[in-house]
Length: 330
Image 1: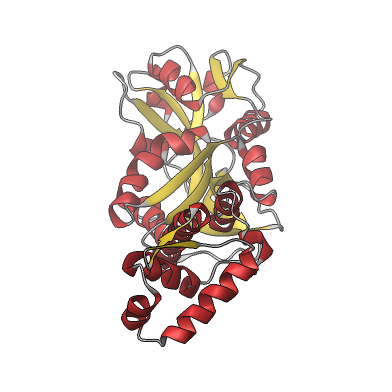
Image 2: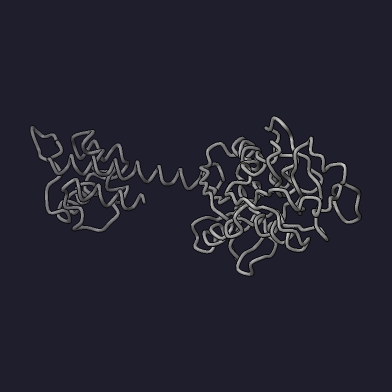
């Protein structure tokens, strides 16, 4: 980008610098700047610790290459011509940009600044990002965080297309074109209001994390489910209902948060991943979470990235922060 700016500046300055080699040599700028400052070849040569003939020869050759004089002589002193003024202005801009580029590269290579690009599903974004991003920004305050919210299929396509570098979501199967960093395994659970009469039917059952409820008790109830074409929880929820053999009334909604809110109000039931048990607390009537189904339905909470993609140190630190916050036992 800086090289583009440099060429633009050279063009806009209306100099004939394009006739000679590019980019401008720092020595060229320094020698011309010293002549303009001291106004004579001899004093400029002394300041540069070179001979007067060498500096005179340099200026003559430079002016020939440019095809225009850079200085005019008035009363034995040298003053920049219009071309000379543009040469100095352009040189100053070029090397200011060069210094800026050098400083930026040093900051990037030392991980003082840079960008982390993340795609996330809406539910993960709701409860994951507010907890992990403050920690990351504390360690990397000058990093830009590029966020994109997508459904699962959109996330995976964004990774493959190079639109984003990291993706935070839940998977029930792994794509061979992607690599995965495991955060936790999550069970699909039933969410119901805390005062629900069906809590009395919940019992312990081997292999399940929570008290288990036979869904046949809810055959005539309403379920709020996510769109299976958009969200993994929508697919797993329908699998559980299908294997149980019940056909309740289903209202399809886009947002898991909406489903949970309605369930908390006693308007029906919904399914969620059990990580929501520790992350959703802003309900007037907190839900109760129960295990269901013939066997546990699980999904893997992961951060995915393209196969062969080399994670930077800040990205690795970001993954470790996620693991410390949401990993097993947290």
